[in-house]
Length: 77
Image (cartoon, rainbow, N blue to C red; front, side, top):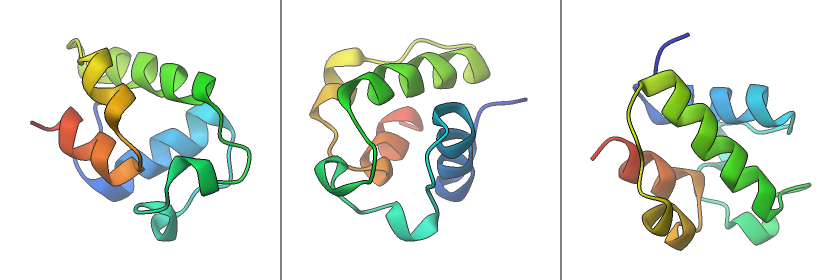
């Protein structure tokens, strides 16, 4: 598997890696409002994105993110 290029692909990776029922409609939903989301999911997603992209991502930046769309912006910057 390669690094996710688009937001929809990132959401698919998140759903697959985290085992959560996520879809495109969840891109701008605050993590506090995503069913089943907790802080460990963010760390697991960070690990998956780093593994898939082969590059390090900024944990402090990701901790400030409140949505999957924000994670996508950080991951593709």
